[in-house]
Length: 459
Image 1 (cartoon, rainbow, N blue to C red):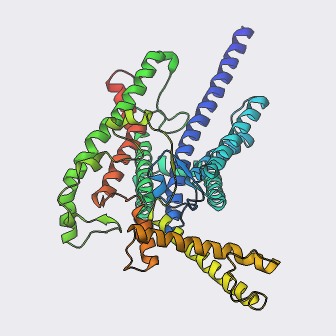
Image 2: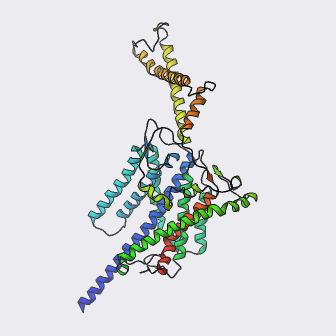
Image 3: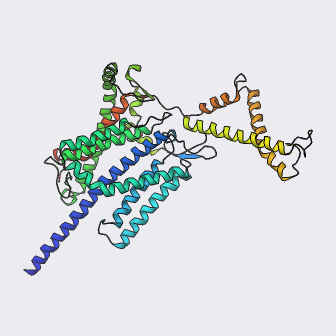
């Protein structure tokens, strides 16, 4: 009898321990979703607010696997923000009241967290995509977001998931207002697209969790809106089937909703525009300026690709880019060249003035070897100016440049001819992206769990 009582107590403690581990895992996944979405949104917010370009190329060579990344501004680094936010949140959990694991496992996980963050941050510098200030600011932003989530995450969850409809509406309104006040960049930067996508995901997740917690399909333990799951009851076959059904439903939603919205929203937007109620954004065509969205833009998505784009993802290779890739790059390069040109001319004038007496007027400082330390200063700036002039004259002789235009104007034209032109964007894309990604977030936390019950994949 005593042994039976001991076994009951043991099983009860084991159940409570497993329940605590499950609660910790669920809260961690929700927190990481909030952190990553906030990192993408606010780093893009700051990029479009400050409009600071990436490091000059040349002298750096940029290595990237995303063509759209080069079109974005450089400060702060979104990759550093996301990597550091995940690492810092993991370290906070491991050091302050995290899961009950062995000291060795705790140490290994902390080392992995540090290595993960450092590899991403150093990698952005090595690939020439960011400077030291970019990754430093991005890392600080990521750490701050993690600390806020760790301190106030549970309070926010209780406010949303355990509150009334008023609470969730206030939360959704705040997110939509942040999307609306997102700064308009000086150049056609695609940072806003990613910010809208992740804002939509959070809208869907927050509303889905709130509503799912009030349905008969969810469990209130260990936390509200928990999806019932038991691999012992379902087995691996049903578990894999749930994953496949969930992924297919998300891609099916995107494949159906995105082209449908891009087709049916423009007439509605024209009515809104005629009533003077539209909220236009810079670099986005208004509905009155086009008849339809071209078909090729319906599959242009850098967050979740269409089904037809999936095979190309496995064949994608890294690209090494030299030279300006965006308008911000071009302006920065021109400003850098002008600054160097002025410095060279200023140094040349000062050197000529200081050497006017020692040097004979018939001597050419470019041909005569310098005889003192002051003469050494004249060589490099003058050679640079002479090299630029010779290059310019040779291009004039080949007909590559138009002699009727000033050199600065021709240089600017040549620079912008190398810039990758951003595609035309349409006003309906903002609402389309919000709806599509809100639906993806809702499917992940409510739609798919309910679907599992109807197709026989529930535990």
